[in-house]
Length: 199
Image (cartoon, rainbow, N blue to C red; front, side):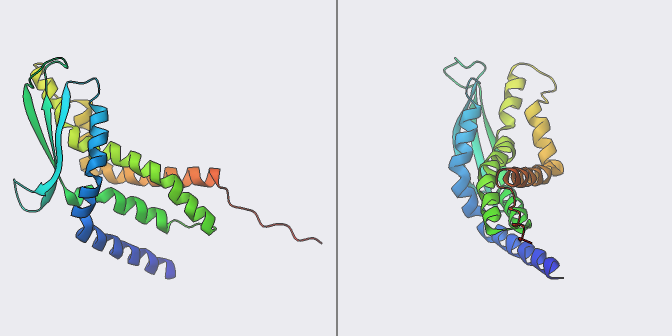
C-alpha cells in the first residue's frame, strides 16, 4: 500500500507544480527552445523572429508563441510570409512533469543509482524537449514553405510528427525517454552485488 500512496502523492505534487509553475517554466525554457529552433533552421529558408511567453491573443490563458519568417529561397532578402505558432504553457510543462515524476518514482537499488538516473536523464530530457515542444512550435514553417512552393496538400513530415504528438504521442515520447535514461544508467552504473560472506 505504501507504494500506491507514494505514487498518488507524487502525482498530486506534479499536478500542483504544473498548475502553478507552467508559465515560469515556459519563460525559463524559452531561450532553449529558441536555440533549438534556430539550429533547425540552418540551411532552410526560415528565420526565428521571436519566442515569447505572452497572454493568449485567441482565448484565455498564457501561451508560448513563436514568430518566424519564411522565404521562398534562403538567399531572398525579404520574407514571403510570417508564421505565428502558439502552444499553451500547460502543454509546455507536460514533459518535465511526466519525465521527472516517473524517473524519481522508478525504484533504485542505491542512492548512487538514483543520482545516475538523474545525470543520464538530464541530456535525454533536453533531447525529448527538443523533439516535442520545439518541433511543435516549428511545424508551421515547413508547411508555409510547401504552400509557397505551390503544393496543394502541404502535409509535411513535420506536420505529421506534430499531429502524432498532439494525439497522445507526446506522452509516449516522454515515457520512452525515461525508460531510455533508466536503461542507460543501469548499464553505465550497474547495481553492485553484495560481497559473498566467507564460509
